[in-house]
Each structure stands twice: as C-alpha cells, then as structure tokens.
Length: 305
Length: 305
Image (tube, rainbow over all chains, first blue to last red; front, side):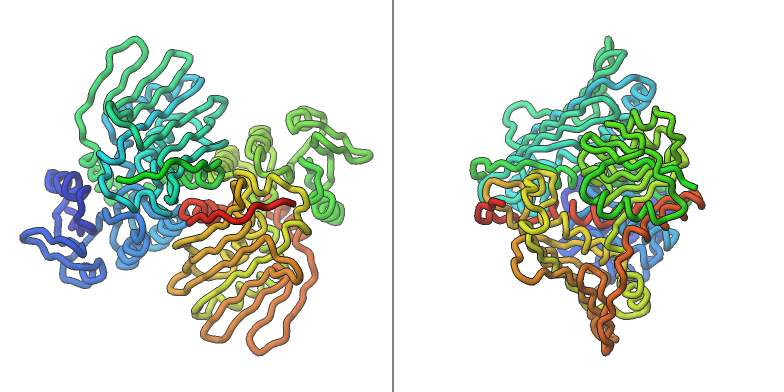
C-alpha cells in the first residue's frame, strides 16, 4: 500500500488524478498540499513542506501543480525520501528535470516523469507494429482552439508558457515513444502574436533515421479539432487520431480504445516504486526547447482570448 | 597509439587541434576529412564516409566542423566503431547530443563532448576551492565584440546560430563545472536585432541551491573585453577572469596559468579511450536551450557587421 500525498488540486487533479487514485487499491490518499483547495476528510496543507512535516507517514507524492515551481516542490519530496510522480511537462526547463533525475538517483527514490498521452489506447500497439517496419516519413497535425481548451489562460502565451507546444508536447511524447529511432529536430518556425512571447502556431522539420518527420501545430483551429499522427512505412500508413486513442493500421478499420491514461500512469508508478526504478524520459521536453533554440520567429497578428 | 582522423579543417582546427595532436605522443594523425582543405602528406577526403572507407586503420575521430551537421558525422563514426571527440557545442540541439550519447553507449565506443573553457588554467582550482564553501551568489559577465571575434559570421545571428550564447556557453560550461550544486534557469531576456533570429545580448536569472546566479552576455562590447566569473561565498569572493585563465582567491593576488586547454582535452580523450569511458555533459547546452525556451524577447536596433 502506497500512502500518497497529492500536491496541487486543480482541474487536472480533480478530473484525472483523484479518480485514478481512488480506483487503484495500491494507493491510499493520505494528505494534500494546495494553496487554494482542500479535500473533505483529508489533512490539507498549504505547502508541501508542512505536509511532509505533518504526521502522515507518506511513501510518495504526486505533483500536479503548474510546471514553473514544480522542481522546488519535487526536490523537497526527494529530500524527504519520498517517491515522486510528476504531471507533464515534468519541469519548466530541461535542466530542472535533469537535476531532479540525478537527485532522485542519489537519494535512491523513484522518480516518474509521466507523459499521459503515451498511455492513450492506441500508442502501445502503434509502437509494437512500427518496431520492425521501415519508417519512410511521419507527420504530426495537432490543431486545437486555444479559446476552447485554455480559456483566459494568459500565462500559456507568456515567456515560459510554451504556447502551442503546451498541447504539442503531447504529440512529441507519442512520436518519441512509437518511432524505433531517435527523433531529432532540424529546423522550426514559430508565429508569435504581437506583444506575446510564446508561439500560437509552429512547424517543426524533424528526422528519425532517414525519415522526414514534420509537425504542424496550431492553436487557432476552430471547427473540427485535430490531434493526429501518421507514419508512412514499407507496409503502409499507420494513423493515430484523437490524441492517440484511435489507431488505424493499413487496410484495417480504426480501433477506438477505452480512455485509461491516468489509471495506467498510477499502475506504472506503483510498479516502479515496487521495483525501485525510475522512469524519466526528457526527450519530449528537449524537442520543445530545441525548437525554441533553432526557430525562425515571425510576428503574428495580436491575439486576445 | 591512437590513429586519429580529423574532421573539419577550419580556424579552430589549425589554431588549436593540430598543435595539440602533434604535441601528444599518444596520437598519430592518420587522415583528414574536409570539403575545403587538406593537409600536406596526409590522406585527405571530402567526406567522413570516404575517410572511414579508406585504408587508414583509424581508432578515433575528432570532429571540429560547425555544430549543424555534426550529429550525422558523429553517427557515421560511431557506426564504424570509432571513438569520437566533439568540439563545443557538441551538437546543434540537446536531442542530438542525447541521441549520440545513447548510440555510443550501445556501440561501446568512447564519446567525449569537450568544453575547452573547462580546461582553462584556473577552473580546476576554482572548483576545488568552492567544493566545501557556502555559495551565496554568483555572476557571469561575458562581454565581447562580435565584429572583432566573429567578423562577417552572419550565421551566428541566424536561427540556430546561438547569437551571444556562442561565446556565452563557455561561461556556462565553467559555471556548471565549478558550482557544487546544479545550475538552474528561472528567467532570461534576449535582445534580438531587427531582422535577425538570435540574440546580440542576453541576461539569465539562475539559481544554484539557495544562491542567485546572474549572467550578463553582450556581443557589442567595444574597448576592454570581459570574460569574468565571480562567486561570493562564506569565505569571500572568488574571481575567474580572462575566460577562466586567471584565478583570484579572496585575499590573494591573481594567478595566471598557462594556456593548455586543447592539450588537456586530448590528454583526457586518450584517457577515456584507454579506460573505455565516455564523458558527455549536456548541461551547458541545456541551459542555452532553456534560455531560448523561457526568454522574454525584445527587438534591438538592426545590426550590420
């Protein structure tokens, strides 16, 4: 039984983490830390330090606060000898997650940097199907309406807010998981609205082995939304749609799986804790930082929510 | 004896690599690959593929081509079972160097991502002196004249050219080496000249443990040039100047060491090859990518060389 502290009680915690924890017999939710909320019947603290100091006999924490500030919270947990699970992206910068991984290794605790989209229903089967194919080309088409999914979230277009890479990193987490060879960036473009710091649209020109991998990310998509990945191989084209939950193999009908991304993440975390392992894959965040590093920037029309 | 192939014969190869290789008895320079130059009396090839295919009995290659394209060259060398030494920065992106490190590990060859400034005369002594001090604050002041040191190098201000981080990464390579705790970035500013893609000046607000670490990078410094690092501790302020070659400890006179950065790099590479180890520290490049990821950008006056 893992006595778990939950840090951050926002929308993602209520929609995904709490139901997944409640449904998994390996966990007891023992306490929470949040500046803004508490849960009925549970010890609630404003800060993780107080939660750790409290008499809660914790084994692990799951951190779903925003990425800025998450590294300091996770360090405190690791210092206290607790196992740590992190929402995506695992930190605000690549340096932070690298430092966290090293610290967890030194202290001998489990660190799990989660990428929930990798647990989408079609992803594991896509990876298995691709592993012995010749990859010829691949495409990401990730187009959603920022006003619909992130209403009023001004921070997302501020410096460090990732802009359209906030959803786009989910596509990169899937692509790095299903392709058999490393995904590397050659060039990128970013359209940054006048007066903003982060892009509202972007393209990435990548490669994996000999295959060109292109990404088209857009935050101004009204009407039908696209969270699609296609991979052309010597055996035809594989299609993942709806964020990875629908898989279509060549010549077959699309298969829609059940959504159990967060239950899978918690099952995996329990497994990692039981076996004394960590799982920290920084590649999706590296690709985003690399895109900012090499991008051609263009000024786009001003944007208001 | 290491039979070495040199890839890229530009200014850095002629000024630094060739003299260091010639002076080290552990190396025989066996061949070169460069599109633009050859060396008298040595087999010269236009491409690394031809050099590898040639009858040169190579053990290792040293790659000092520009960072864009270096990953493909290094992959070819690793595929051929050769040990690889890389000029700084080790690749064009963090993803590329991570993929190279993994490939070298899989193939069982040595990969050495060099940071020549870490071999400056004062750096090792600075690290040793700092290791048991309480760090209270630290500063980087890296200010040079782009027209003097990079005349006509338009690419440096293009997308992927790093701008003022091309020299600034040297300061970050020293700072990450001498501080006892990880160096993490909180925020950054970048001044990008109108019509250019990379910054001509930048600031970074970082931290290491509880200490604030600030960097002030400028490419428009005329008159005296600054390549200075200061670290305030409980035992006074340590000063590294002239790019790390002059060390001043509190209460002592400045000590200027001999410049043997590249001889040290080649000595270290020979050691790594002999012991079957790799040395790939991506933290300086991560900090640069992180700075681009989170920076507030400002438009600066147009710049002409």
